[in-house]
Image (cartoon, rainbow, N blue to C red; front, side, top):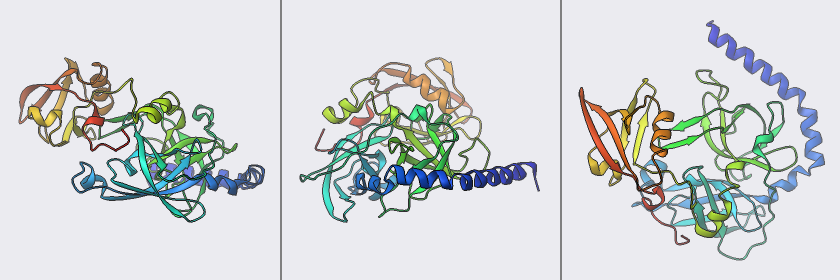
Length: 335
């Protein structure tokens, strides 16, 4: 048995013990907070995406997940469920299904907001403080019962995450064990407050190269400074990152372009898959974090960005006019 495998086994053994020790604490919390009442604020979300949508092939034309009511009207979810949706249906706790519309989307965080089209009485949950979670706290992943079963979880790390789709979070919440119905599910603290929204399945929740299947949650504190803009305008109006339309990977120790978004800024200037990005605006970059931060520090969307690539051993320089990513995708009727 390798040293790494031994470490993994020891970790999960310790985690199982911690979970067992907290069963009594969990039961106390359930009674104190009327745990079942929390489900009155959690809905299922089902969306249909047109075939012509830019994300229909990569994310599918039918998507589903969960959402949580945050202000008696608006429902917070992870946005890729509803991005470019032409039809959205929410499943209420009483089993009734009603039509909804996309209210807002935010690419920087990944949050999405939807709201019922017909008048509906919805009970909201309080927004908590995602910075107040400690490693030993009991937290709960609560998807809609239609989507899956709720579960007790532990936060096991908070470290940066860089996604290939021009996405970066400084301190997302990583939890164990994995809940297979994480998509859009709220992460709830022991006070019954929302502290995060389910985003991804992660193979190494504990840390890089440590096999530990879990989930990643977008911290709720990222919603607070943009919530008014999202409700009023359907998008954030400040701190909008410039978008250049590239998918890339840095697993090989260098930034390799894996996909160029059709008709996007990089596509228009001629960047191609397998190009290796070496610099941005004269600065050397060698991983997704440094790449994104350098692009985003260039200024607001619309700024010209100089990107250096290596292609078949030849250095090529490109000047890319960035855009607002919200203007690249199909628009909702609400914004």
